[in-house]
Image 1 (tube, rainbow, N blue to C red):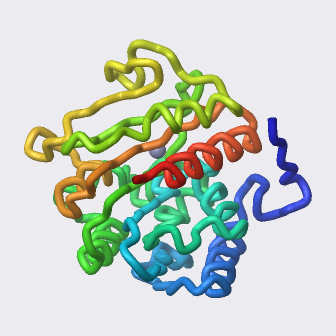
Image 2: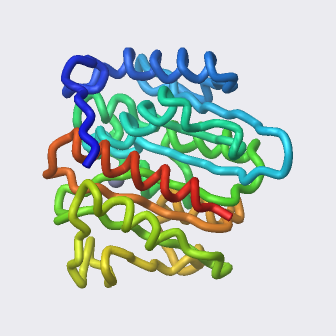
Length: 257
Ligand SMILES: [Zn+2]
């Protein structure tokens, strides 16, 4: 099992240094040829998007993290992947790495105005969601979308799959990668939904959903061919969660056909 020490790297320790974290994203992205856009603002923090187009017929992959402020591992995982050079020429990238920076600073799931931004996509009235959607509307359709989360009640890693067109699933590949670092949550009911060996299939039809999370917006408006919401268990050590999510994302993207 790979172990990665994060102790000496202040950006990777809690509480998060949000300005430092966002700056690290910007610097590493620019150094690797990404375009860095500030699409909105939340308090003192910019809301940033990183995009990089690769030549040839490459999949368009969207990743987002940090929409829930009590889930620090997802943005840290994306930073580690970025700084390791993982987001290379194998895809065209669209990355929103820190969607609720004030929430992350305060350690609260919601935004400072007490909104769960991941339930606000059907009729976006929150300024952060409006800015995010405004940016998304300028982007093309995506082949794969990954929204990276954590769950305080989870007993291990699990995922949601939205696969409206029956594309080849990446779920088993991701669960297999996760197992090297974390148990899988094998509960038959996770987050109030039926689960099977760590996989939850939710109704991908936007018309059947009242509150749209980001995933449903992506399926509805970006015709995202395949979507996963990835969840590590918040009760595990931060380094273990980072290693789990890092392995899962690498496995999914490396296996995308
Ligand atoms: Zn979440």
